Length: 406
Image 1 (cartoon, rainbow, N blue to C red):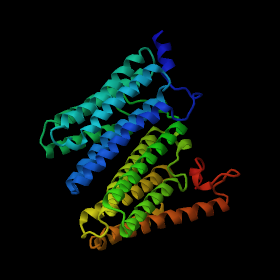
Image 2: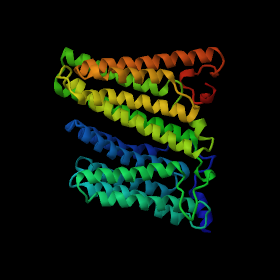
Image 3: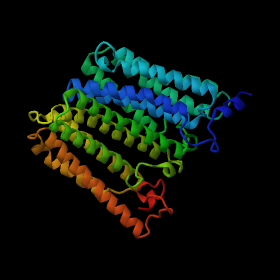
Image 4: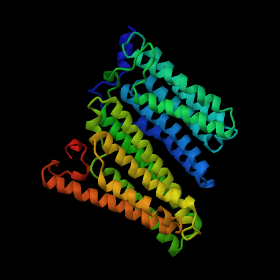
């Protein structure tokens, strides 16, 4: 029967919770996307191009997260799901290949590929789930991707300024309606029980994409270091860039804040979308950091420019903002170490406008180090006081559970 065939496609709770080899293979497309996005930004360090690059990033990330959700809801070992993921990967590669000219002659390729991925996936899953109660979920999601596809496609044929506005509208629909549970007039919204995630699986996927983003930062700064010429000054700049990556990596892991397997298992769909949005900001911050570190290594003592502050400080600020919003969404409190680090960056921004890239990077690293160090102190104190329990032999700074006890 059709419903039995549909049931076999669904990921069951007893299925392996680790990411499959197919999902890791799929991430290669995202690597290309990050590389082309960083190239696009580095070639035109203006506020307008930064906005456009972040719009393109948001589109690429939404394909990644939608695919992560799909492999969380459906069994990635089923041949038809594997075929779907591979098709999405190819179309996604075509989409990110259009990134350099997405606000020029290749706008139709970028938008068309984006819309094709979401509509194609929606139509296929809707047909495969015939006779199954979850077919309604696929229908509601598909309807909203049809709606958001209108500004995506119309924008592809409009001048640059109008394209920015229309694509921002499309992104607001895609991100916002997911947070609301895809409510549709006359059909209602997707019930919470139909949006349940496998927390351990998604938590692992988030960690993997973050490590990929950090890899892009190392790749970009390392290539710049090799190409610009290895000198003592550039070696010092490269050291600052590496320290920045280490702080981002440790800041992600410190209190298990963003390792959210247990939280996602609680069947709170809006919180799950909020976590996805926080990770979007984290990855966007690493994208800015990658370009900022390339500038740092290439031109460590170049004349002050506001672009340097936008990239180097902006990357750190986005990372801290994401962690703050995560705490607000999950713990309903403001984490003061991150707030202090963000305040330092904000208050010193006028002074940073007068500094060269090395000076800006040094201040940014100090702010990040302060936030990370204080968080380490607080989590260790919480462990000593028994407010967070650490199993024998396990590092309390990287626990996946116990977040809500803080």
